[in-house]
Amino acid sequence: MSHLFFWSQGNRPFASNAQPGQLTVGTVNENWTGDARYYEYTTAADPIGSGIISPIPAKEFNPELYNSGETRIVTIDLSVELRTEYPVTSPSLLTNFIRITSGDSINTNPNATSELNYIISGTGTTLVNGETINWKKGDFMTLPSGSVSRHTASEDATIYYILDTPLLDYLGVEAKKFRFEPTLFTAEEAQAKLDEVANAPDAHLKNRISILLNNQKFDQTLTITHVLWAMFGIVPVGSNQAPHSHKSVALDFVAYAAPGTYTLVGDKVDPETSEIIDPIRIDWVPGKAFVTPPGLWHSHHNESGELAFIIHSGRGPSDIPSYFGYSIHSLRPGLMRVAKFCERNIRVPGKTLLPHPINDCRSKRCGRFSK
Image (tube, rainbow, N blue to C red; front, top):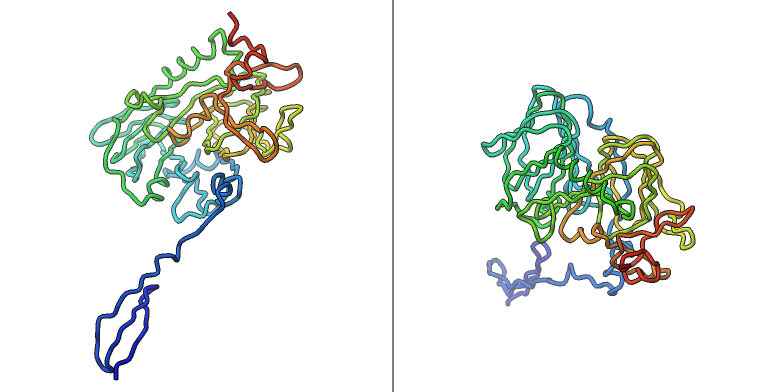
């Protein structure tokens, strides 16, 4: 008499007609539906707003984390908040600070397609794949995938260090091919280009005074690498930037600011005053990093007597549009859309600068189409 036996290996059930005391090869009945899920479209179309995915918190990281002590790498890890098994600061990027004491060295060899370094302080060299790059305070340096680097400080140095390792960890891949050569953006050249923009005749009409750092190999995206974008900008004295919002995460670093410079972050804007309702205030301190979550309104303000300098960075090129004059604005509660905003903003007495869609330029009489 034969018997029908059922057993399982993992989540794969086996069935077999076998005689007692005999071994036989069973039939594998796969369960391919165990991971299948279904969501109503509008819920999944805006996973941030609907709360489907873990919210990215507005976080601040002060320079005391890294600006003294031994040589080390300090990682800004939000993996607990974002529920990942690997270090993340945003879903696709990881922010770090490198501290190197005078005469000391530290090695880096990440699984990343791009490395972005901003020299916060100090001077030194990077030996990368047999080549030497000299750097100093205020320089930006990008390194491609496959970079085996040794960073040496000739005086105490600190570096703001961004990687796209979370993106590769999420995809389960390794970076194999470099897309650009190591590139240095000197402090002098970056400052000169920013000064040129700031001193332009129409600078006072713009909602943002900044420059994008671009590697010429990526002339179709205007990004600093094929994966990362970086913006270097100022917040002028007395500036009250209009609230704006975007669906991408921004990683912000304060290169310099005097007391009285700050960012406001909140989830609602008053339609009458165009001001953020019950905002969180993030005071700017030189060397501070902070995370601006996607989907939240935010604005930058400078009530000090000095220019403030900020570095915005994120994953590109898909994140770029919100920083090229695109923004999110509310039509009515529960409905949002993306519009191309005019770079000429209307100044209303007693209020912030008010951005407006290009389609409204004539009615706003901003001068865009004036002869």
